[in-house]
Length: 206
Image (cartoon, rainbow, N blue to C red; front, side, top):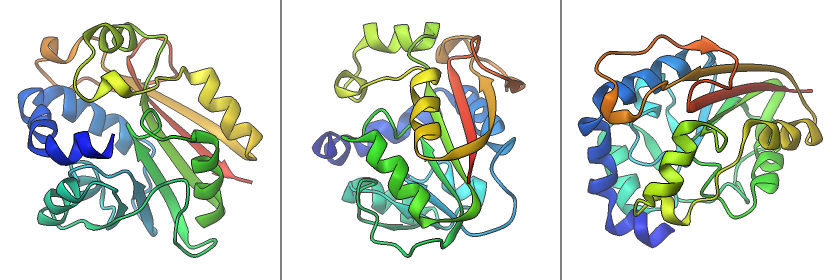
């Protein structure tokens, strides 16, 4: 997967321009749960499209090509994988995984590592395409260069992993009620899940 992102970094980044309002809708949903203050971390920052606008200064990204673009956006992106974070215990106020969980090898280990680097009551924020949604089905059929090797999850599966890891106080926000090409204005985020294809889960470290 790393090689795909290395060779197709510009193609990946162009999605956010092509589907500008879909991107802004995702960003609006994230802003509902991402803290405005504190030390934040993004795990799997890609080209820095989210970290830069959410005020997240520190990021982890295994692809050198993606890191280079993220750094051009002012994001301090360093190499690394979510399964083994070479970072201090209990250091961050929050950590975001934005469309990352479907690409990692061991999601449970990533969640546990994220918990380790969070302060007490720190937040984990997982933004994902819900496998059970119309959008999940659409992406699975489409088999894009990026998603053909992805492993999608539904909300219950990720929530169960978070609970098993000891997270609490769950919040859910959803958006993208249409396919990306059909969104022509910023969609208003809605609480919960089950309708929107893009869901943001927020939970606190116990």
